[in-house]
Image (tube, rainbow, N blue to C red; front, side, top):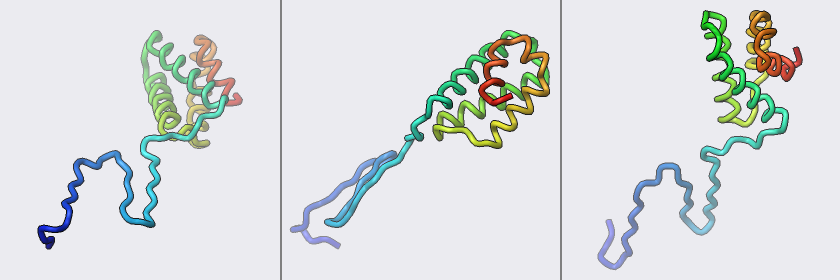
Amino acid sequence: MTDGNEPGVRIGDVSHSTFAIGSQARAESHHGTARQRDPATEELLAAVRALRADLTRVRADERTAQLDAALADTENEIARTGTVGQSRLQRLRQLLTDSEALVSLIASAGAVAGLLGM
């Protein structure tokens, strides 16, 4: 309990905040900061976005839906972490290989395939 001589401290909403209390306290925040993207990742992200836009222009089927979902996951991972994992890249390679007719039809699919080393 406090007596009437102690100052009152009131802390409001602290969501998405970083603070430290005490003489030896140290605060460090990493909220919502993705790693800096390298030029290759930026190029892949642009190609992924272009392919997703182009996919809206073709007749949708199960393969295009799977490819679009994998591209969306890739885009989200890059936005969230600043990079993309090898397992996700391998999944994209496989989907693009399975959709060879699509890759030859849409230039953006060829661009993504090229960036994946296919």
